[in-house]
Amino acid sequence: MTDLSPRKAAILDHSQKFAHSRAEWRRKARFFHTEDETYLRFLVPKGARVLEIGCGTGDTLAALQPAYGVGVDMSPDLIAEAGRLHPDLTFIVGDAESADTYKEITGTFDYIIVVDTIGSLDDCQAFMSRLHPLCTRETRIVIGYFSHLWSPALKLAEL
Image 1 (cartoon, one colour):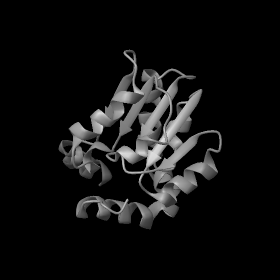
Image 2 (tube, rainbow, N blue to C red):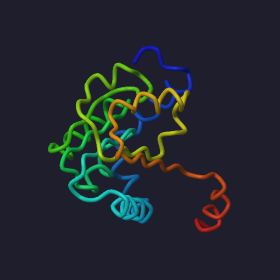
Image 3 (cartoon, helix red, strand yellow):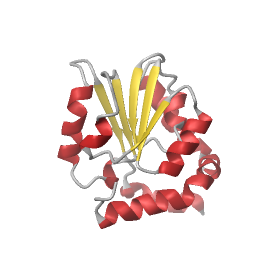
Image 4 (cartoon, rainbow, N blue to C red):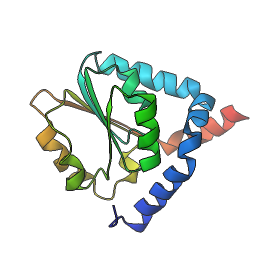
């Protein structure tokens, strides 16, 4: 991953810097993550084949209890932690927009989860085209992202 844009390189640097404290941050935001995972479990049935792009430490992927689960993240430290926490799942270090990343992934998936990752992409259309070989006609792509329109309400709630 030497050809990252300056923005993506900064995101990778940030991910690496805070990889070892990710569990602490998830604990602090437990309510949010629990709600997120509850909703995703509503969409994704237990025992499905699931690919998560931007998987971090793999906690969300593990919460979905896939029959076969693969997580991709560009942070080697986050992927190392994911592998340690969830040895029954497969984790790959790679850039979600790079064709090389997808060479390591075999088969198709029932669900592809992209939560809080879209904003780190430089070219969403190229990213989506990379997913096509991993899909069947029944594959569902689930995309979630934080809306900054909620920021004022969240700031008020924090007070």
